[in-house]
Image 1: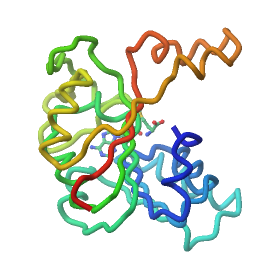
Image 2 (image 1 turned 180 degrees about the horizontal axis):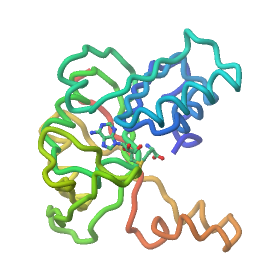
Image 3 (image 1 turned 90 degrees about the vertical axis):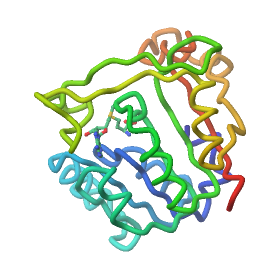
Length: 208
Ligand SMILES: C[S@@+](CC[C@H](N)C(=O)[O-])C[C@H]1O[C@@H](n2cnc3c(N)ncnc32)[C@H](O)[C@@H]1O
């Protein structure tokens, strides 16, 4: 996710949506990004990110973690970035229009998406629910109800249709099998990628 995108991360201003404890923001800075803004709904994770960055001596002016619901923040705040990271989040929502409009309005040349997908050639979405009380799941937002949020696994072709509306094309789907072939078999945590259940997409803006 980072290594194969070093060329676009070098010197970039990055927006990291669903930044968790800052793990990918940190990796983006290490890969040469100039500045990262992380947006994360859960306050305890934002606190962890700030603590970790201070502990690792990352200069204050290189990062900013914003706590809140990304759908609200993307509407309220004006971002101007080169790259958007949206890693491990798309399968926690059905609010695609708001998400991709927010990504587009942030003005990036590239967005890197990493998501679980439904496997089919059809442009469809498998609908499911997320428990908003679970830390890794969708956070409580304006549309969640009774502790549940609607979520879904889109197919890659469904993502391509949605991205196209907001002026992005899938430039590259990362070849996880080629990478995994070079790694020890015990790395089972990434087996979803090997089976095509999860993908990493580098998407290029056709507008900026
Ligand atoms: C599966 S984790 C992925 C975290 C990280 N991006 C990664 O790839 O490791 C999903 C993250 O989305 C965050 N999240 C869920 N709903 C959100 C929302 N509406 N706004 C901002 N963050 C949200 C969760 O708190 C959690 O940190």
